Image (cartoon, rainbow, N blue to C red):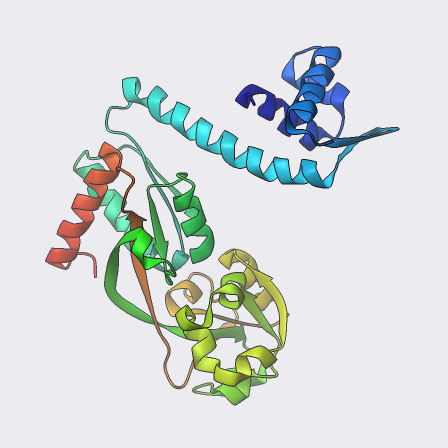
Length: 299
């Protein structure tokens, strides 16, 4: 299976039309059709269903699309890394993770660039589970997470700084007048939730443990892995968002922040793979982070 053909497949899947895809790829339609047919024969699966005005993916095609995207993304990253070696000897650092430590990450990047340790940092904002998935696939050097399930797979630095989980809601919500919120306040309240909070096993899920037996009875009206999307939903009054106080401070216009009772601490960690060598830029980044943690510059 050639990577080039997988890239062709992805363009066809995106366009939904072989003629349009061929024009975008600057190859002939018969050539593209032949490549796709050979791919189907190689995999022993029908990937497309031809229709009057284009094509649609079969179930096998949908599955291949997800895998092909990952393979192409990893290939592109490798090509970019090697292409940069000649013009960018310092290298770039790739990080994925939660928004709660964006301030500390930005400060660290500033110190790294001031010391000429790296050129560019590429930060992907996502939940802990997605961050770890990107780390496992080799798409990033580090992940910043709040929960780690398979701790034996990773090296870990836990940040000393601790925050709290809070409820973020519109100021016209009756709960906004309370000084603290207990479980009974939130059981029937419409909630917008992180997808991760629903999928993390109970033994690693601090929020589920805080709710106890009531967790399965929550009135969840929307979920997402994107903080910005969840904040927007809360701002529209769709529901109350449970999040970190450091994240809530990103956008609090016309919003109320109410702590939970009992308090629920939130602590992040930087993780990387035990058995995967770091790039020179990532190794310098990690060394600087350890130095700044030791001196208290980053809590």
